[in-house]
Length: 321
Image (cartoon, rainbow, N blue to C red; front, side):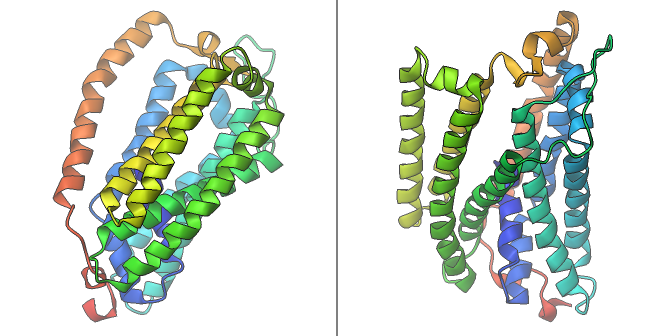
């Protein structure tokens, strides 16, 4: 949720022509974007500590998209740090920042779609990935990559609108993006749900099974949060719109997790086959139980400190060199 906002803002910056306004976009996330990235490290650490077999085989399967994601994240950091050092090279760094945001989203989305499709394992005593380097590429994974970009554009445009002062022109630009990306996101969600229903038996068996009424309630809850988000956005209640969008995303993520159960990677690993020994799980849970609240407080504190709205003059523009 946090990463999607600043990555989407990075994609948004590709369509901002005013260099000072682009600097304002980077300044809007300058105090929080690096903390958001730490959740990727935590996610990898949790996967390694709790499901090491999935960590080893899935990262082998997703070697190419995850490598591109990591390189793109590094490119974003370099662009953010170097853009203000030279007015001559600033357009280059701005372009790299936006492009790296786009590739991060697309290939992370591809990795998610490829994971849902599963992958073959070897017959060794310790099963490992047995497919080719480019097996992750499929029509469905390409679509989920595009879907990730579309969804992040909605989150990013809401973020930009919430961070800029109300009289800034870029805020009106972001408002237009909210409208367009909202409708695009609705279409993307419908396509993804229908495609998943037709493609994955483990999804259709649950969604259309004896407990279909439960999934209907989940769907109605999602629709409710989306409607509230849309109303808040139209009323220019920016923070409320972001919170309702986060609620919708959380519901959809939880729905996907419970749809997959007991699969961790569909048709490849279940949570029972891939889990670490119980002693390791208990120890790891106790350690992370003390660590995660610290991260949450740290993230909240950063957001609170940098809560003030900015203007395009806040960023690094030609006049600031």
